[in-house]
Image (cartoon, rainbow, N blue to C red; front, side, top):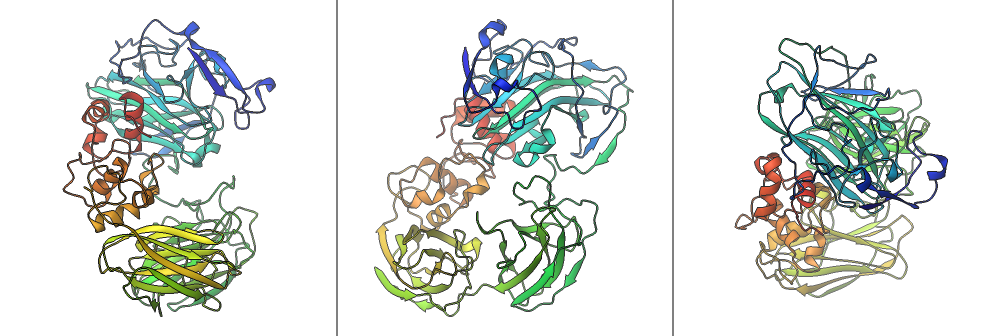
Amino acid sequence: MMRIKLRHCSLFAGSFLLAACGDDSPATQDTDASSSSGSADSSGGPTDPTIDPDSSSSGNPTTSPETTVDSSGSESSSSSGGGTCLIPTTILADPSFEAGADASEWGEASSAFGTPLCDAGCGGPDAQDGSWYVWLGGSGGGDIGGVSQEVTIGEADSLELSFYFQYGLEGNGSDVFQLQIDGDVLWEVTNADVADFAEWTQVTIDVSAYADGGDHDIDFTGIASGNANLFLDNIQLETCGAGAAITESDTVDPAMTGGDTDATTDTGGMLTCEDIGNTVPVAQDGNNGGAGDDIVPSCLIGNGDGAGEDVGYTWTAPADGTYRFDTLGSPLDTVIVILDTCDSGGTELACNDDVSGDVFQSVVTLPMTAGQTVAVVVDGWNAAAVDDFTLNINQLSCDPPIDLGNNEPVNQDGDNTGAGDDVAASCGGIGGEDVVYTWQAPDAGIYSISASSLVLAPVVSAYSGTCGDPGSELGCATDNNLAAFNVVVAADQQISIVVDGVTADDIGAYELAITQTGMLSGDCCAADDSAGCEDATISQCTCAFDASDLGPDVPLAPADCCSGPWTAACASIAASQCGADACTLTDGGSCCVGDSGAPGCDVPEVQDCVCDFDAFCCDDNWDAVCVAKGQLFCSAQCA
């Protein structure tokens, strides 16, 4: 089997020869020469090997950093090599993949190459142990894959699983690599963790909960986006006899574990907050010099060395409404974080790094109730970001709107000069002046809403509730002279429409147009050539759904459901996210849409295949990992 890999040098820990560095020129690998005579299970799924307790690789492991995760999800490190069994016995077959590609000990899959197993012929780093290792990615176009093995784990007082992982190169932001046992995610890394695994790093996990004498599926599954490179080697499952003990090690913050749901990390500082009252508008001046670094925002983007110094404030909402917090006009490159309390470990309610690629200040919007108090933290982008800033707090308001009535079509001339900046949509308008309209649809249908101008770059958006509230936004578009989108509106439904400028300089005359482009028809639960489906509420919910909530594998932009065919993916979102309870689809909807919030998917053969070795997918949630396994192991055909 011939295999092509793209070569990258920037993050490998000295594993490449200089001759291998440079552009993305391909390296060729012939894996047949080193493969065993065994064959993978025909379904691509995990196999049931005969367990040889003496099986181990013959290579010499290198000394590497170590990360330890216990069964509760906490993480620890130890300079002495971590916890050890008194009398360890390895029960995984071929733990370092030395049988080669397509060996029967491991179920293996790669959407880009067929197998993720590599040796020196791939042109990657040296194996951590022996000659073979798992390489996921390196295709340039993304790779979804992994390895699986089913083992019988005898009863024991303690049990550890360890492996070595290296993050060679991050992709486009949607990389993920997980360890699962029986569908339980015990460890996970994403793009945010590149620096922690720049070289082979040992991870040790307490898996004593699975030492019950039963059969268990051990799955390492990942999504390597773009040019990402993810490496895995030397997986050891060592059981200890009855009465054996595991050496204790020091516990540190569990920032790398899949069970870490805390949006902020306490870096050892004590966040303090100045009370700035309960009125709007607020224009609070400050400087973060000498303030200390008390939190690490979840939305921090690629600065390489953690957050900078941060200043905290508490503020109380004077009334029910949606509020905007921003640092526009500040010289400081900021990050804004909203916490539920003034505490480094508080729950993060909202976070923003940059308004856009060239506006390094921050803005968040947050619905609040009267009397609700939050902590607003203004953070520097990195340790060098120290300067003055202004924190602005304003209540978003749709008053006074211009009423457009309930007729169609609409062609309304307008001018945003001097209108003020009250609203910002998801696709732009921060700092631009905006004009608000209300309009009532005469009939249920699909409507095109557009704003055109010869003198400004317009932003046009529509809302079912408070204008500017992300939770009620129905659609949004921006462009140089003509911005347009399609939206579903129910009969007699009143919506708010905002015409905005991209920047403060985009002011002048424009034309707002509303035109019905289609009727609603077709079963919401089935694919159809027409846009939308017969239920206006379900259509509206589906087309306005935030696809980022479903992870990186959604095969469409939901807004396309109202401008193009109502595809099976549209029906899946309608069924799993928008209350189409009458749908006959399996609870989880499409096998190609992850994080549906419900178990199972709509192709029984794919569903049963995946759930045979990952019960989580049918017992709890058909998530992105289930989608990946469906494509890899079970012949799911996804766009």
